[in-house]
Image (cartoon, rainbow, N blue to C red; front, top):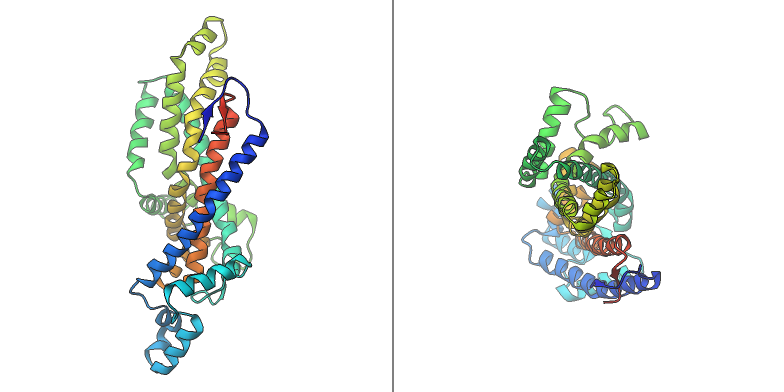
Length: 335
């Protein structure tokens, strides 16, 4: 919890203690999350053995199916299955993915970099564009720009990410034919080049960024608008400071504080939106593996991906608190 302190920047040691407390808190949370994943998967109507066998399972004998079930560990009760996975994961062995036919660690390593690239680019688009539009709208409240962007932001809040993705593909890829519709590289290409990755990244990153933009815009707009009415900003204007200095040096810094707390809270929505956007644009990230793991009841892969997503949410919350403390010298971390 963040507490107010009298006018000095908190020491780095306090920040480290706060991070340590959050890390200890994360341990039971992650344990409960992994157990919940195994419990939900065990109650699922999907049969992991049939999913693994595919069409061959239609003609396989019951003896072969039972042997395959034993090899996959699907014949074990819930608690022993979860405990075996957990003890192996603590030693670095995440198990083998039945649907991907390879170690879970390899699946994650191959895909997480592309998901991180997409999420980071989209987050940068949302923060930078949302901040710029929020400042401009707050400067001329009630003006045409404020009314237009605010209306668009409220509309985008209700627009699903996959719908925005399909709309973007129709307009930019099919109608204008200026950007690729999906994938990581061109269809005929056998190598991955930075240029192709950049061109294929534009649409999914913009769609994911625009889906997150309304919240950053509205927070910055409200925060800067409130700061412009505060006495310190009025005093800065009375001292003859330029409007740009008042806006960027005083109002923006004060108005950005509420937005910093938004960063952590948007991480779950960013992850959910990234899964949808990756699926729409056939981006080779974590999304396809997550969907296949869920539908095939792939216990090891599903648990590892869920832990990864939960850890990202916890880190996002920690990051927002740390950024808030660094931006405001009155904030402390010992509470």
